Length: 512
Ligand SMILES: [Zn+2]
Image 1: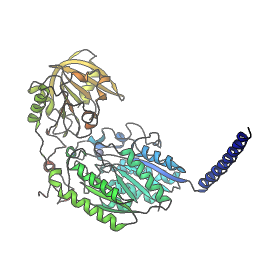
Image 2 (image 1 turned 180 degrees about the horizontal axis):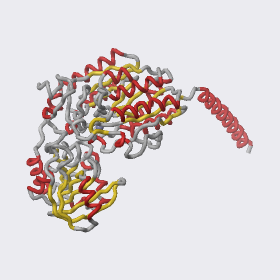
Image 3 (image 1 turned 135 degrees about the horizontal axis):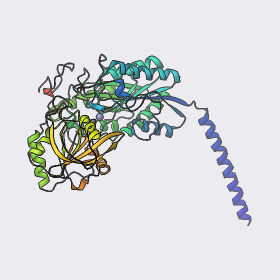
Image 4 (image 1 turned 135 degrees about the vertical axis):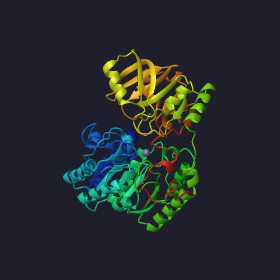
């Protein structure tokens, strides 16, 4: 009895001690000044060889600019938010930012009017909602704007003019085309390392961790930037294969060896005719210029040494690729996926035409862009009707001929508020019609449209690497063929009518 009473007294003393300790700690963290960070997003991958400019109307097709950027826990901003919550004592403020542009990366040159509206809009809203201790900009890096040679660096300069000398941190896509102008303007730049882009959330977390440390005076970002002089088609940039895999592995090795060093490589976006096109190395260290330079030189030299493997591969043409796919389907490796990688506008018919020519069955084209056909179908036809119609072949100059099909309307409905139709024709072949280029990256599109994926022998996707997320890494595809049909995004970059890129870049001008 007595012993129990002593024990409870001891407990009470311990508990009181714990409470006092707790209050002390809380007081300590309360005295630390809360950090205030403005968060903005302005992101586009511009295919300058594509036919239609990207206008204000395209940018506002899905709604006007918004401050509502902080709703998700994933992606660059989601990761940034999560890490800020873990640190505590951080107030995040959403800054008025444009949404995604209609047509995504099938859009050509952004008009200067649109660029001015959103870049100055972000700067003005930062000024209106300030002051801030830091700014986080979620950019892409492959934006191309009429009259503005290096748009993302210009965004940072406009933001700098509004917010002054506080840390501005930037995250970029692996397809970014950037150079020293970006690293001169921003305090730190971080770029994702995976294609498909699995590490956007992790990168957002990294940017937040280093930005908060910088604001608190525990880190002094110091950058080195290099351009190895290499440009590669997207279809060869998947980081699951060599040499893209080894390049990123080398960056990770440096990061593991050197504390507080962040090593980024953008492979670049070859379908933007801009002066800073191609691979970029960007290294951030904690107040160590010598180390940043050393790592940047090493990475840049390494990419140059691997340039032949990186940019010089060959792919089967339309006829060869389709024949290989049909052969694989006959051997039971279904579904066979054909990546129609060069179609940048979504309405190319080369592969569809060749599949019909070679007598393929159980094929699904996912998808074919044809806004005119969809308009006609919606106005004049109903679900279940038989139909004879010409499809596609007009979205750009390389999109092939319209293909005549006679079949049945198997599905007619809305997807993301836009009309979509499925036509069934020939030997149980299907084509999904959409009004824009649609890059299908997972099989989730098929079920809502009533398409039994297990019955498909061949699936044609307008994708280069992102489809691997849902069709390769899940083990779904029995075989995959990247086919080099004529298009605005060819694997052979030497055929593109470049005007603005460096005159010594490999493999377009420098051949060896
Ligand atoms: Zn990308």
